[in-house]
Amino acid sequence: MKIAILGSTGFLGKVLLEKALDAGYQVRTLVRNPDKLGEFKDRVEFIQGNVFQANDIEETVLGTEAVLSTVGPPQRNPGDPAKYEQAMKDLVAAMDNHKIKRLIHVGGSVHRGGEDENWTVGRRLLRLMLVLVWKPGLVAKQLEWEVLKGSNLDWTLVRPPHIVKGKPAGKVSADEKNLSKTNVNVEDLADFMLAQIDSKEWLRRAPLVGAAR
Image: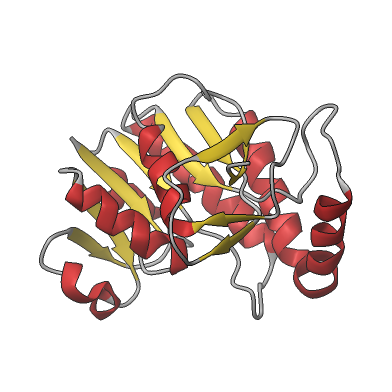
């Protein structure tokens, strides 16, 4: 099965790429600098470009059966949220053009949008911290979700809290209303994303995905 991965040279994206290749997926990815793929450069089909160019996105998803995206504003200089909203619109349009339905995208546990969500003290503090240092990023993630909800794709918006390194637990806690913990292991999160390719459990839903209790 051929999949597209967007954001494959980032913190989560690198782990996701490695796990996808180890699982036997054929991968096409979009990168600005192919050298950042490191040891995986010769194991993937890459398009050199960026997610803010609609033609680059379309070329990347062509011929794939599912798209996984870890794209999002960087912690430093997150930039204009509208650019990420437009990138999501371009991605949805490209997938519609090529009749690709499955999209797994990473949002965040502290942007609003779910109904009757439980805002624990830890989750509120995490949101407050990000509002102070990354407000444009939160706005961008909210805008991306609004685009997804208005699309006809079989999307899943994975909403993790703080993503950390360390020993993986081999499982996560996923719930639409409750965040289990304020962190999640990067390998466990990547495994969860890959598992959604063939799963219907979270279709058109936005689970909060934290470390297992």
